[in-house]
Image (cartoon, rainbow, N blue to C red; front, side, top):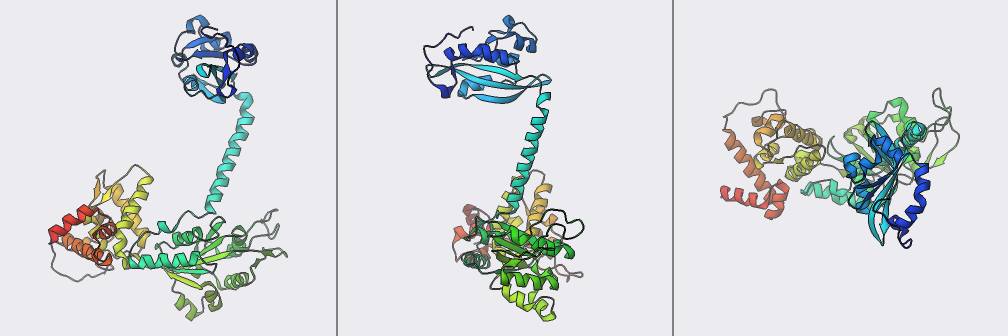
Length: 474
């Protein structure tokens, strides 16, 4: 073999093969392979056997001395020389073929002086069943990981963004809830972040390493709710299948069950849920076997529960069983001081999903302060995503950018839209924006107790920008 003399002894098996061992093994490896090749420390071909040369289509004597990447563009032999790490099985593209190859570094005195490669298979057709099985196993693993992700909490208390008094009170109560095993009832309009809060409570609790299972009662047909909750025994009904199916209570055993939109639960199921909560047992449909469950309940609703109790559409005994610790999640219009930090967080999150990136100007933020946000944080995210998409690469979302994506004109953003808004003098846009900006800054300073750094964070602007605006206001 050109440029490769035998070594005195076998020195370091972890690094690869020495020249002496290579000389002994090479005839056997060459015979068992569909081609063999060696390179020196510079990545030039130092030896190639006839079968590999035929695969390439040139005589061996014309290949020796040439850079291996010039002959085999997709080879990773220079990487083997550089790292000293063997690769026992790898797939390499060569022209219209896929080759299964093995690469070994050649070591002399602890120094890598070259590499050997063998083509184990030059035809993948015999390996098709094995590759298909491997692909199916990979797909099953990916599906299992997705299912596991659905049964674990993704959010912590830091994901409930806000520093306003209302947001801080929510976080205080959430920490209390995390330290207890009692049921929690989250009350608030849609889009306020109730599910984030439920996952955050679970993540901070002693059950954090156990399942978090969420179920939206408003999204499941009424005739399927009982099966979803309690599971189904084999052959319980036509089409039920021959295998038992676990319900949400069994899936959440040891962890937390989040019942979203609990106000949409039918009365008949409310009675069964109450019994499960009191007995900590479930009986699957079509089964006579009772299963014990250990589940912590967090429920949420956007409904007016007081009105539902009065008209009898929600059982009072279940309500009191669920409402041991109540957390009212305020609507966005009640914590507008959090708009700045919410926008900053949402824009960062939106940017992670693509190449778009932008910041919100103080003028743009002032426009958002004038809107009533019936859809809360979910609507805010949608508005920012729309503005970012339509902004055509600009670095900052301005007042016109934000006004363009809100459902009412800028002049009418002071409250809910009206069919016949009162007529009044129209002020220039610059004056309207300046007045809104000044009001937002004054609100932030009051909420921060005069702390300008904290006020700047609430507004979503830098401290230097806040100082500049305060200087212009004085």
